[in-house]
Length: 432
Image (cartoon, rainbow, N blue to C red; front, side):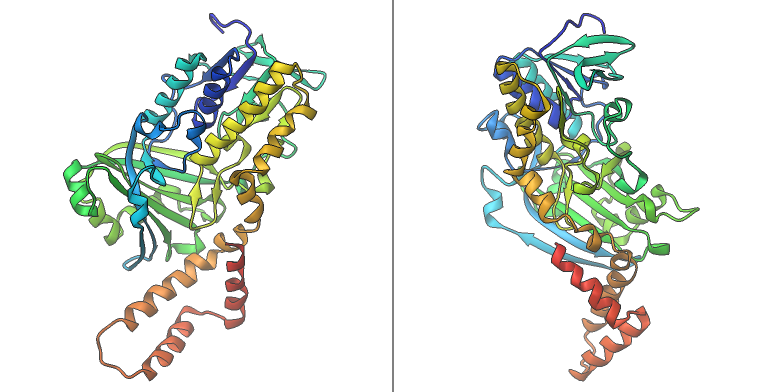
């Protein structure tokens, strides 16, 4: 690896987790190198998303005033879609519209470059366009990294190379291999629109943004998928997340994306927008069931590489847990370097510290949430039923109240909903 000497710590991956870790370590005077396969850092990341919370306050008390954020999220909308119907629940909170704000829409390419630059300004060395092969392991202890067959020594390594971590796989550090069951596929477009059009269409001022998330009902053959739309300064981040296990032969993920884009509700929201960027990306389902070992002799694992992405159907958060895990890992690694003990026993403090934060707390609390949110009947049966029943109920036909019970029975029958099975499915709400 050209011009690279040995370091105290190598951080592999320049996403939010890796750059946050490198920034913290550099602040502590640790000799750290941040290595990313993208050139520049951020170029390999799928643009567009929401960063909830203020985990970066540990590094900079007023970070959002300096970061390239797009808009402050002042409202959130959860919707149900079928082929020609839509229902939207709109949450609009006055306190969300004031500093320090609760979340921000970001474009990852810009945000990740800024975060890596802050790490560099703190003293971290940055290496772009370099793919690390694996960890250098001798007698069960990580000694550094291997790149293009060459070995580079360090006292510790932070693995932050994202979902389906090639570093962990190539290093033989997974207790069980990842499978298709462990991931969703995310497809995303960034669509440009004039700033004034976005603000008029979504009822926003120049600093405000909103986030939409949808259950996609009515798809063929019980496909499980959701959609999202986030407002940026001069663009929209639009995409779907598809459970690959539920895609039948002959139907592809991009078919689901087109279904979403062509929905009348979505078409109105993205009218006249021009495609600027298109990308696909594996999204870890997250949860304790797919979490790799978080630490070992000489290494720790953070962010998506550690499957720390969280979703319970109403809340989706990947960027926040990535940043927090990077910082918590860096705290422990910094201490380990200073006292000269990077053993698995000492680095286990990282997992302990994560348990005291929302990152692992949420994953433990919602460990069974997939039993509800990945139930195909939520998408193929109950969503169409709710929309069909609501549409008929809300028609102004001056019918007597008895019509409600009659209509409900009729719609339940047409939807083929078994009351016993529905009760069992509904009981899954307790996991949310």
